[in-house]
Length: 104
Image 1 (tube, rainbow, N blue to C red):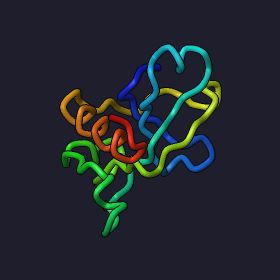
Image 2: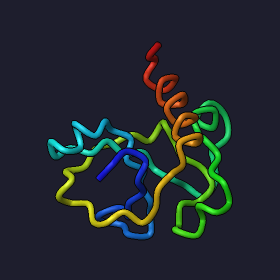
Image 3: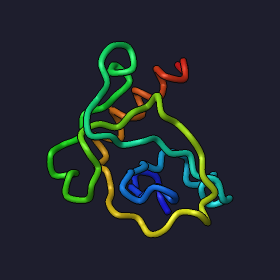
Image 4: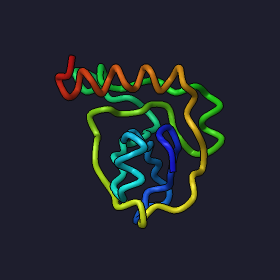
């Protein structure tokens, strides 16, 4: 498991989650994930969403990564990845996470 990989939600397989934790934390058994949704919300929460390229729909990722929907899972609950987000999009997601968490 590596940062940037996309997984099906363990209890709702139609939903997609993006692994955003550092590899060292993931290797220790905890995965920090954000949700991938079909459409970014409006307003402030929408500002914390990163649009996803159309080709990510091929593995069910939807249209946006939501930095305001951060959660964690035990890595043992996650199956095999269904896709991978590219480095440029991950950089945008990193920026959105910094804003959501008020990090410099």
